[in-house]
Image (tube, rainbow, N blue to C red):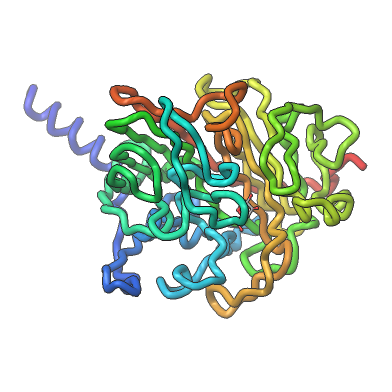
Length: 382
Ligand code: GLA
């Protein structure tokens, strides 16, 4: 009897497990390294495809208000697209330190470090050659009672891209089975003190990648404050209120309503780090960061994170690249919501620290929950 019961338990739990992720070849890098593409699917219609180069989100399909699915992130059909000059960090894991480090310099434990100034005069998104978006990661698919996932691992040697310490990084993408939620969990350890700040750089257009504009999307950010910057987008160190500025997204606003007020600034539009209010989401580890919706398709996206900040970037550098499926990516036709520690934290003692020490573990998690709204009256503030 006891055996029958445990067999039954085993069968029941096996039947509640999601099916295994699938894998296919995605081609080779210019150095001849093979790249794989993994597919995660759930019962609710969300499909995520992630490749081993840069642990990069390549496709993300979500249903609209009529149940019609579309790929809502920018990307390419092949590795060559991702290796081209046109790739502005589409969908990648970004680091070791995402966003900018002033003049590519910082001092840690009395030693000065110099990094690539690949966004003149600053360092951007981990460097020029071997940043985390450009290397091929090792993938391990898994399935558990919550859904399907892929864990990507990469060991960055001491000194890679100028950063101290051998950094062991893992990034897991987990697609929930019972909800349209994709969670990205980041972990890292080091053998020398080193700055770490990881994010995902997906470009979203909830109307479908390749749609004209995101200026009709509506956005709400859980942020009373932001970090003002100089003309090279390096924070001044101050934290200021969004009140009476075009950065006030405390109530749902149409993105296009005030973006032109920023076109003539150094940011060229929205390209700002918002300081998240520490209003916790349901799970107390997470801050609610952003709500995005597209009135046309009805698709919505809710982002929650363990990070203290979020960079809202309105695709100001998109220039009509030819992307996946013959689609064109026009200026401001997609946006990024990059959860992270504040830019240039390594040079600002007053910001939450990005320094990882030997013996400690870096941990960060962000969830993206997709839904639909059928509301006719999608009210926004003026
Ligand atoms: C980030 C930066 C932007 C831009 C994009 C990539 O979001 O803040 O200024 O560099 O990455 O093009």
